[in-house]
Amino acid sequence: MSVLVWVLIGMALWHFTVLLPDRFYGGIIGALIAAVSGAVVTGYALPTPGVPPDNPPGFDEALWPLPGSVAALGVAYWWGRRAENDNAE
Image 1 (cartoon, rainbow, N blue to C red):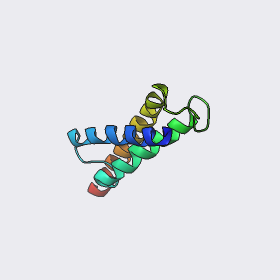
Image 2: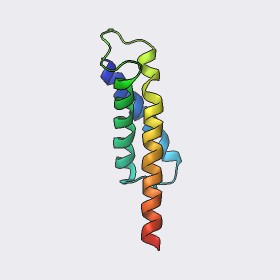
Image 3: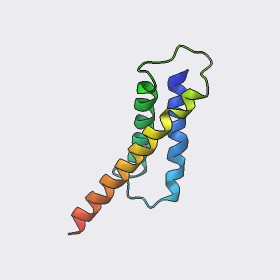
Image 4: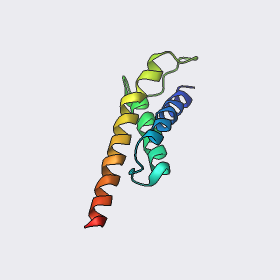
């Protein structure tokens, strides 16, 4: 159940990318992949590695994926912006 929460948190943050210019590496689908994968990685790794056995998941399981998802979106945006600038030159 915690993995589902992590994926949904990543998807929720991905929905806010429509407010930004489309400079993500891979476009909007690349942003989706980055947001979900970043959320799952940090959800799994923080605070202790592994999937929590609690069912239903607590509030902590919804907080730990946030920094990974935001960081992955930032990297995807930076990478896409860099690739766009390299092609323009």
